[in-house]
Image (cartoon, rainbow, N blue to C red; front, side, top):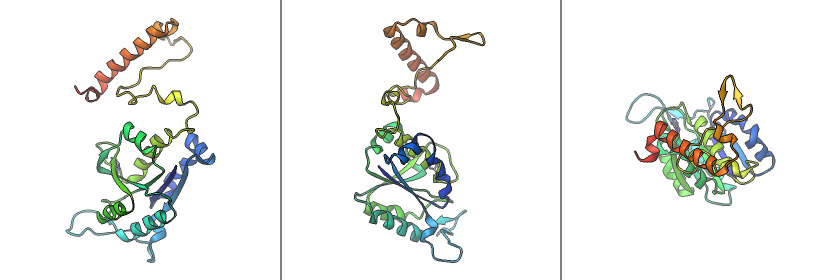
Length: 229
Ligand code: ADE
């Protein structure tokens, strides 16, 4: 998979060199290219924002650098990419959407700052590929960088070969619509706290039933919305 990121803070993405995604990059499983939006500015101050038409607080990202950035990325793509613009005004990003996006050949993350990007950029990007505005949740971040990082990690780990043992992707929160069951490791007693005895029983059927009950109970307590309650 190819992933391009456009940001005015490209160093945010230096951490993509570490951990499992770093290994996947080094192995050529994921080709991540990070671009500084200011590459496509030509004034002395490398300006990327301006005041909003109609008035209001804050600044809006100008369309021109974005148009050139998207053109440059599309020019050396072999497919019509999916453009993801992180935004608190977008559709909510979920595990199901991560799975869907993990099958894409080319994703482009456009990180907005300030009050957002001139709306015409989204319409223009829609001529070049598929556009999705995506929100991590109902809260506001300072820009799209942290949200892009979260989405890249969630999507990247679903690409075959990135996570060493694919079984570990199956029994996770959100994969079956429930939160994951609690996990324990050795020692069996730690600071007077015992591991639930069922997990030491060797009875795999009973363990599976217990884990499923735990999933349902946790989901009911913490995330009743997932159960449609
Ligand atoms: N940018 C600012 N807030 C955001 C959020 N909640 N999700 C995605 N992108 C954002």
